[in-house]
Image (cartoon, rainbow, N blue to C red; front, side, top):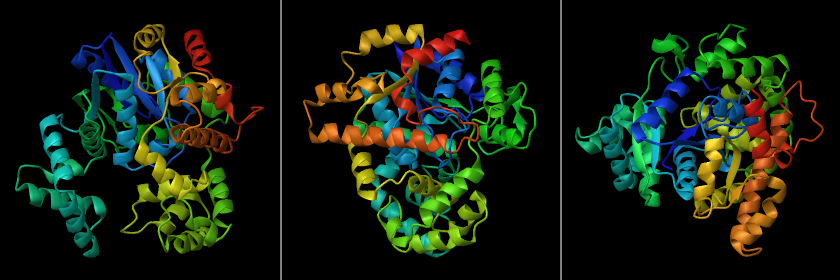
Length: 422
């Protein structure tokens, strides 16, 4: 069975995602759609609107066949690490194609830009640093340097939009892994990534949809029916993150003092003072982000940093795990067709497939031949995923679950049954 991979967040699943799913199947000729999806915290450093199991159920109802969780350490990371982790998961499973959306559909242009970023990395870093000192933001500085080095062969504007940046990162990840996966791209339709308006085909951006929901506005027709109903029920039950709770939890972390911050991931020398000062003055999540943000530290980077703080991610541990890549494939759910596909690929998958985390230790021990360094890294990576789930529940005003470590009690089979019931 031929499979196409999709790298997703589904925050929430909307009409643009449905278009991408259908177009990806057509472009690749695939029978099976495999989504690698972020868990409870996302690439831009934000908690997901719905928990990962609800988003999995929606994806399955809308036509995705198999959903794997991208481990937290990659899901809440910069574009290169996010892309490398997701592509490595798809590569380990053995999918034949990766299809991603971008502005314009220019795969050749993205490939030229990816090659230049790899081949002239040192020059780009030096040139970008010089422009940063002149007052440019990092994205603008890098785009200008790339355009200059390419002598017109690469459009620096390709580095100016989120989907293109991620597309280039996926292509670089495929190159670095030596993957046989065929890259494909689908032009983005409707509203732009950050647009708050509704575009052609009744397609709005996820950002625009979340803003409408936050303002109490209707999103009727902007999401598939299965997604719209689940979002409505989740919000009504108070099971979507509250940013006031997030702010207070972060203040509790930050008030531990500067020494406690220095060992955490992405806290560069001197930044702990800026974080502590912002915490003392902030009255909201937005105040806190704005209080730390600067020309050198973009909003997205600060948001990711705050999520690392929330989850107490040690710098040395994160750097080691990011360097070594995913150590397992966590199956969140699959359709009947997805189960048939797994039956054909399970034996040749290069990473252990975890469908029930209560059995994860035994599976990892078998796969890695005992308590080896690779086994310990897998456990460390898994511990971060579980910690992220526990902390996510603290952000939900309506949470009434008995156990916060839900990862150990929610299996792929249960998710599939809920999807079927829906």
